[in-house]
Image (cartoon, rainbow, N blue to C red):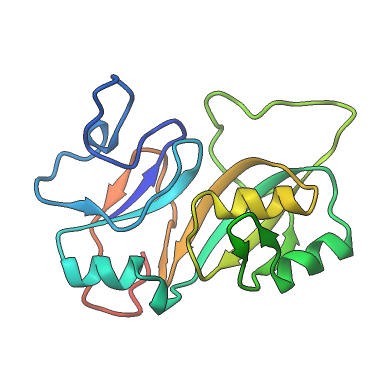
Length: 182
């Protein structure tokens, strides 16, 4: 199934600290997240009871593309965009090259709480597609080139897309089809 994971929700079904989890939105037994999405990130999360599918989605050897819409502080220069496209060096080593383009602000739901606004610092939106999945990778990549991430929304994993799902909404997917688009 595809879930639009809201901001400030853990990508797990239990939490001993009273924070919001997937259980607050999905009450289907026997399913597990195929991958992760940080608590402060939003968007597409795939859930499955199929261990082989989960492995195909999460195993780095498959290099399944994941696309994010990223709101960053500032206006990117061509040098910053090219650095992201060629791969940047993080503390845990160089990243693979990413597909990156500056995009118009996408039509998204309002985030709660809203992203901070500073009148003297413009923000920009990027579409970033990566083929690996290190911890907080997109945030660390944009920070490495001087463009701190303000908001991050995953919109695609392989051929599966977020579509028109609103935060907390989910839908069943035909996972048997390799080119399944939601």
